[in-house]
Image (cartoon, rainbow, N blue to C red):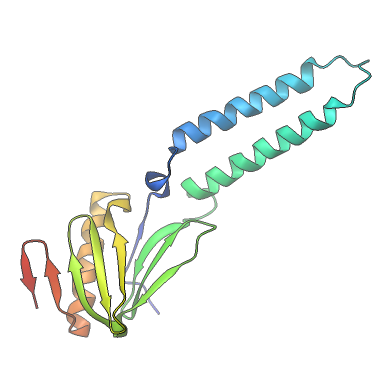
Length: 164
């Protein structure tokens, strides 16, 4: 099904440690691991070189992990996609997609920070609109949500009043 809109999300905005701090830590670990490997005397009788290499490999692995989660280096992994039949939220490589089928939605509540979907079975799903990476993307997502709500005759309640 053709997507009406696909906007990128900022996954690092909902982490406890920001992307910049994670990147600084992993770069410090890489420098420290290389320092340990290159300053060890060659005629040393201990086998600590193995531990230094394991530490360095784990640091490189963590660097790849945070780059995959927070950048589009391996393709866009965090996005909000709006199609004529459903809304999909994906927040990263290792997180599950959340698909909201519009045929099961009985109402949408839009605020500047989030969109709440009331479902036929009584459950509610919410999409955090603050995670959208650009203001233009926020505007596009809002417009497309209103468009699909009109198409499916879903009542939309906005922060300032009701839109049918």
